[in-house]
Image (cartoon, each protein chain N blue to C red):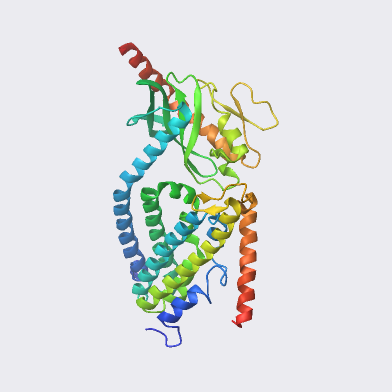
Length: 204
Length: 217
């Protein structure tokens, strides 16, 4: 069933991390990228939740790919994604309650994260399960890198530390603006510019 | 006859097309029911612990609570079971924490603190909310944000025996009037409406329980 022209598992894994990075190259999943990167802990949890949904949705869709009907495929993708998002939402509320309260509104929003439905369409509905899993891990690692890179810059500048460990205010004046939406946009813009500059220098 | 066979054909075609979606819906529904059964007790315990911590904030250090009393009441015309947590200090019940559901911009779960005879509001705290970050979340107590502190703290000491009245920030907040927040009017009015509706529903039952306890004592 695999189309010979489509990339293999190793290529899918690699491209998700760098060349097709969901944050810096595809500009997908911008809502959590901007909203939950005020702290590193929030960014890592969101990336983990998204990774779980990505992998599980890709597995289910890849297993069903020969039975999917063209006009019903989006319905199947949405049904699958919504199920795994609900599972991750309940598990977070049960075992990471404080984090679940902080991320609250953004965890259910994973359902409309374009990265996941895009990978179901581009890869899982066309390629075998091992390629779909590699693809999901590649995109999940890429998303994790995207979120954590932004969160590190924002949290360090805003609080002088990370994970609750901070420098005294006398050593590092707090850049409060980095906690809010302006800080998110500024950091994303600067890092994206840096990634583009580095890519051009490498000729990618 | 031909029409009937056409209709049957249509139904079969529909099932033939959609069988995968139907099977998936059943499988996923079952899986979600299992996850709900497994996680619900843990989530309920988390909410109880969270509310116990908020009661300490509202009623002062040393406040403890026990399992909630469940009151079957009508809130805004709907039958509901409202859990009410006794706030206990020095071995004596000093008030109640009413677990209230309401709506701001979206679903809102909060705990409302009142004194034992439901005469005075002690405050409220948000348990879970889906209000917009940076706008509607002003209704949650955030020590670093003066607007949120001012909004939440204005509820303490208000008369709990009559409804609160939301007013615009440029009008005086005397008596039972409380200021809404510009830019978050729906969320702030949602808090007031939730407090009014839940207090109206449980007030008499709680007063009866207080009298009963007083009589026993």
